[in-house]
Picture: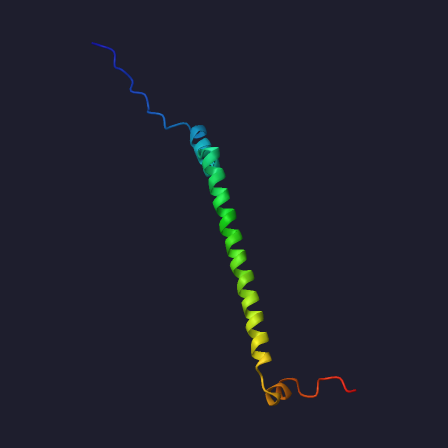
Amino acid sequence: MGKKKKQGQKQAPSSQSAKTEETLTLQDQLNGDVLAKLKAAKKSLVDEEQAKEEERQARLAFERKQREKNMSFEELLEKYGDQGSKF
């Protein structure tokens, strides 16, 4: 009669290693040069978007001035009416 071997319970992966995997961020996983390239690309896109918005605002102001410049006396009188200063 032989001795019976006890089968040990399999242990789940340690919870500490799972926590460290969860705390790793994308920045930690990327190389520094890749991260720098991504930041530069983001900055260039933001700058480009800002330049487009400024250009759009300037175009709208120019178009508004052109419309007012081309208004007839009657249209100007309707728009501004008696708001002018009296001399």
